[in-house]
Image 1 (spheres, rainbow, N blue to C red):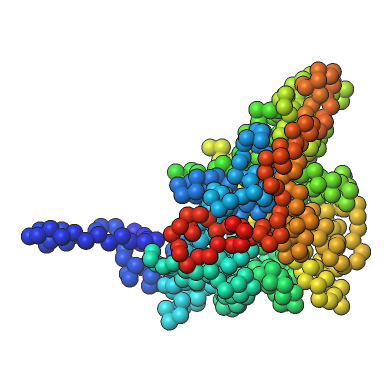
Image 2 (cartoon, rainbow, N blue to C red):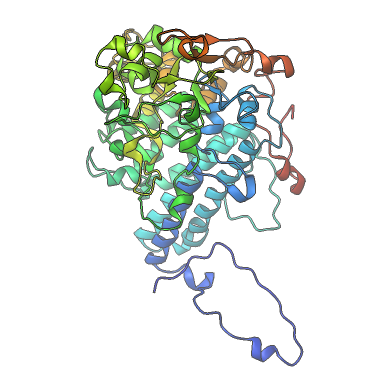
Length: 567
């Protein structure tokens, strides 16, 4: 029988005069901490628990404590950007996400609270490995490797805490129930602590066996630690340090971009463990009762197209799962930028977003048998946006990059894609930025940027390395990967880019159903698009919105935690 890892043990004192000896009965099936953390097998088991927790709380929800159902690794960061509209059914829907999207969020925002809690939950379980197997107790290579992998999981969570809250307390050990940790000294100090902690891990980590090693993509490797170190130092604006760390990943030759034709497979079942994945959290369908809690049960629905407002493309051979709430739609700014820079025919545009015409005429419908020509499809009332109020927060383009697809379904209609925390494309773009901010004497920074641009089949070829080009490539390539807000803050561009967020929430309608026209014609409706601006003081405010507020509930129980400015 395997030993059971206990995250915490409650001790209850029972004082019953004359009966104490009868109550002194050993509890069966329980292993005390002092008996558990001993062997290599114990270390591996504890590390497995850390991976499990990271997989659950980077990708999934904290239902009982936060009451929300978004993705902690992506959602908060994406709503706080110019990548998307926080959409949904209408302006009364998706309220906490819209508050972030329009930069009017407060300390009780459930998405912010839940994300903050998830990151500390990951750090805590990783610390159980580190606290119990590090130092003198690390008497084997297995234990040293387990500690190192746990460090990296903890450092990923701590990095997001630093980028999101600036001076969030450093979780360098398992906090006792009565501990009240105060703010870190500065964001820069936390970022340096992360880089230094990763240096402690790197000597004991292994690498992928080959560039096609799928198993190596779902474990913490030496190269992932270097990539994470590079990101921490880039965020600290230590460009030379970031450049050195990221070059280690590139020089390993263990990663590459997938072909342009395979870009649409990224983040989906068919793309799991691909050569572009530096690290992803493995989700294996088991059919067991806990699988639902691990597989992003509502996120897949939240980010899918709004189901009841469209006649969907669900004919034979469809890739689309018709079950969604439409809470994420590409922003007009992003659409215009990718069309102007990459062009409508680029591989990147086609892999990331779909136009309304593509949805209407290039995807399969059950009525296709009766509509053999384009003219027949244009007049077909069995397809298109049927809602009288159209699709809220939409400008005629549909998210495809993270859309829940048929290939991602389990036999019980759950999701089975992995949560990718780092792609090689991000490594290349961070390296290009570090070179642009220092020097590129050997041309490797330009080569890294060109590699991303060429794979995208962009209509704008990259010929020089400069920050303007780096910024555009990063905007387009990392769309919906959770980095945009972090980038804008680091670059000092957040006020200019996000200052008008919340001023415009258009809807997209089909004149066939709203105006009685004989053929499909999509159009943008802005009659009430400025509703949020009329009600609230919207948009990014410099000196406040560079970080999120510490959650209200944390402030209530921790007198040593100082709130971020402006909240």
